[in-house]
Length: 477
Image 1: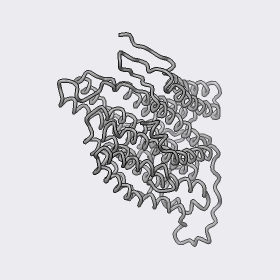
Image 2: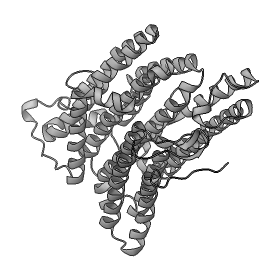
Image 3: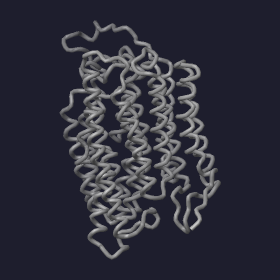
Image 4: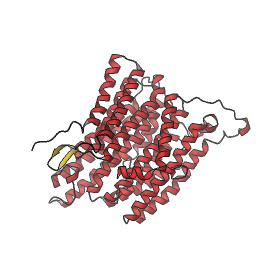
């Protein structure tokens, strides 16, 4: 059978892959950090423009009959643009650290562009092979980025960076093997690889199909740090450079959510996804209550947020829109949270303890206010309207689909999460122990211009999403 190829439909992929090549060329031709960083950011913006430009204006490609391996849709365009936007944002957050030489700019930008290419592939994937290849292309560069350092002194940051990279790699290899085994069993029992043909109702071996579907879902759940494949996230986030941790908690998690949203509605795995959601949100919230380091608190919080995202997927196709919309809100708010940490910490520093943020709001009031806005959104409280609308949509979707008990679990966990979100926000406005507030006159710390720019843009996006939730729901549904 002749397979059709539409190169216009592949423009987002060409732009993303071309960005990685352009970074290498600029590194070899100029060797200048600014030129490399600028070319990578320009390539990310072009990728986002291409993603929006081809959505709905051309046909899918790599088609055999009625099934296609590269599927164009408005939601795919939004996902690809989100990956590109997150990549540009992380590059801007990384500029101060790259300026002081904590990592080689060429390798850093090249690896980030490769990860963006994998994210674009995930958005348009129409079969299991394309989907898994996209996930691995997104994940593989992150192994190196987590531990990438130009200098290697014998300090905590370098040691934990290496340990975090190894932990991330080992758990990822195991989860990928599980997902591949599940995909192989599904193909053996149903003969289908294209997502549009995937179903647990097909084939002569019903039990084998069910096992394959379960293994595939569990393997993909690693990407969102769902229980039981969640323990890598806190150590990896805390050991990675802050901008890389921001990318892990947003773009990497978005890739896993999109993969699950493409697969779960076509497989009879609702009860399994519901169990994963309950365990993930409960474990994440309970362990976050005990955290004393800021990045680890955000890591366990993101695990709990993954449970909220998985919950509507238990309802199958009826919950896909709510899950993707919540994921869209989450990545913006999580990016703001990590962006403020980059603004509040010295270039190249780790996230620090909660106690190190005491009095931060007095010397950096605007980044502190952005951090509180992000935490309020993640908690689902005003003025974080984006997170509030997202949680209401998830609960409404579950109740409308007959999963009222799961909606109740989401509500209870949202209340539990208030404790550590309020604690993390309050510490910024409290003074050091034993020092009168009137005696606190800390110097104002300047925020690097690239970080300030991307932080203001992210806050603006979060506020706009909060006032126009239905538009995002319609785009992602």
